Amino acid sequence: MPVLLAAAMTVANLSARVEAIVRRPAYAHTAFGAAIYDLDHHRQIYSLDGDRYFLAASTTKLLTEGTTLSLLGPNYRFRTDVYRTGAIDKNGTLHGDVVLLASGDPNLSGRIQRDGTLAFENEDHSYDGGPDTKAVPGDPLLALREFAQQIATDGVRRIDGRVIVDDSLYASGFPELGTGAVVSPIMVNDNIVDVTVTPGEKAGDPVKIAVSPQTSYAKFAIAATTSAKGSDRAIVIADGDSDAAGVESVTVKGTLPLGSQPILYAYDVPSPRRFAEMALTDELQKAGVSVDQSEVDIHPDHAKLAQYYTAQNVIATHVSPPLAQDVKVTLKVSDNLHADTMPYLWAKGNLRDGFALERRFLQSAGLNSDEVVQEDGLGGDAFIQPDFMVRYLSFVHTQPFFPVFYNALPVMGVDGTLFNIQNHSPAAGKVHAKTGTWGSGDLLNRRRMISAKGLAGYMTTRDGRHIAFCFYINNLAVPHGKDAAHTAGEILGEMATATYLYTP
Image (cartoon, rainbow, N blue to C red; front, side):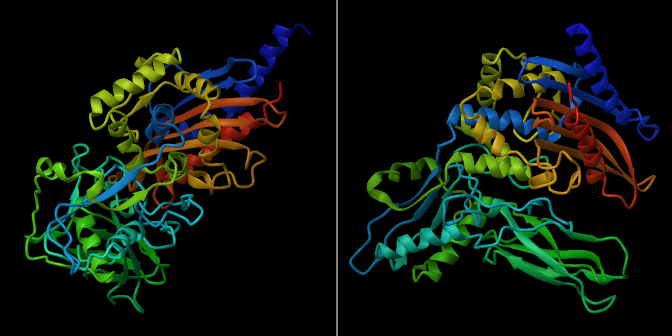
């Protein structure tokens, strides 16, 4: 058989496998996009509306993290210093302020392990409210506690000034579009307070809560009750009311069904700066350093403080694990906050300049950035053409940082955001890919609408062929009672399995 004819039949076979899934009557009102690229022979072998824009959601993080690795390098480390603005007398009194200069380190948290790696849970605590949501075990204030211990070890026994966090590295204070965590160059515990809610003994009883970390920043009250067994979870933790010192009073409202397992919810702190300041103050006091809290400056003068940022004024330092570890966390769990901060860091605070650097990176690969629509690092309201994505993945495949990038991707049926997708598929463990999910409710019909679900990455097929692929679903209606994101994820997992089984 002529080679060209055999190749055409092979592609037809692959097309039939994929389109048997996407042409099901249940998906008649849903848009699918797909592109599959043979990395061994450097050619695209399948496309379904590959030149159309699809709402890409968190698959956009592939562009963000690839650019980050290219610009900063896998071994980049964040250095966060704490400075003093006055002298320390012989009695151990610091006559001045303590200033933590935020470096943009996303991992001032309990993710840090003793071996220098960063831990993650498959269902990250920022994606709250589900039975699989977990926080990483450990001390969420680990970095702040170490700052406090360093300061105490240096002989400081009392601070007669303020504890300040300088968060002027870039403009911040707004929620990222995914989970709502507030974007800031200071990130303690991902700017989240974890609130685990447990139902009471019987319907009508108040729920029970456990808060981590416990700090002076937030006080929690319970107004939520236990509902009938089998009812829907309806816990709400809204923004609190802050007093003059920035202390938040937060009320847990809603209902949790009787017999439910404990569910972790995230309280997104409205002021990451004040959260960090008060948490550091707490840790200093635990370390035996008294702090005069009579003076609180909600709006410190950063320009005035900058004169004290000299080597001789450093009283504590934290150096992060290498950037490769944060890329792993960001891609494995699809951490929106971490991804959203990266374009600010590329250009030292200017978002427009940051994206100019990404555009230059894409152009260096011979890619047309017009085939992408992107305004943030996480993929909020981002649009990508599938053909573009596989060409991008093909380029990344040739880069020195590719092993870091590849190993940071979720593995289908194994971990990250793919831990529960196609667990018993022959492709389980063979697909390394980034997911993306964007959705909304439909109260009119009591269902969910998946506006976007994506899966893009790499696999080695059953016969050993290396593939880059991109699959998108836009506008899939999912009936009430079904896990909409998981339902859409399984459809894309089927498409990945069909590709895995492709044999030229």
